[in-house]
Image (tube, helix red, strand yellow):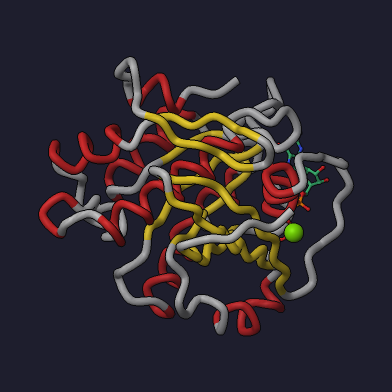
Length: 229
Ligand SMILES: Nc1nc2c(ncn2[C@@H]2O[C@H](COP(=O)(O)OP(=O)(O)OP(=O)(O)O)[C@@H](O)[C@H]2O)c(=O)[nH]1
Ligand SMILES: [Mg+2]
């Protein structure tokens, strides 16, 4: 179902083939998980409208192919993106190492006005983990970008990553410049004021296909928010 909206955010899912980009998007936009691997050919997109701080925000989320042969096709879609999810597979170390490659791609094809988020998917798989939560969290911190682990399969943190991205983009575009979140800049850390501004926008609850954000009652530590499974 589509809704009237005030803002349109263009978001991009990037990462190696098979890390679960399409499954994450299907879980968020269609609320289902099939477990099938159908390699994305080129690029596709889904939409979902949510409510952020009382405003309807339409998320247009572009799902890109991770396979190398599609790289030149997808770079033309980087233009105008407000946010990028850099997705790796927690059970596949190389997909995590390649995040550097994807960061370089972003640097080459976008300006710095973009929110970036690191997402470690498949955290439901116990016993085959090749990337530690702590290591990835430290890496994200060094880049000054948010990080979460997800499972498209169980649904863990899926709503949270998309909502968090929407809130961060919303903050960047609507808050006065002195309290803009800085995670669109790949190297800088958010200041205390910025972190407070982000928190003030609050938590989210799903309601009839939309997500309403309401003020936080209780302060949640970033560690609590990031923990998964
Ligand atoms: N256990 C587990 N498997 C997952 C999860 N997410 C995706 N998968 C599996 O990983 C495989 C690849 O998922 P896709 O979403 O198609 O991967 P992709 O990143 O879109 O791949 P490309 O389109 O080729 O770039 C599928 O077989 C899924 O079943 C998850 O959270 N947990
Ligand atoms: Mg795909």
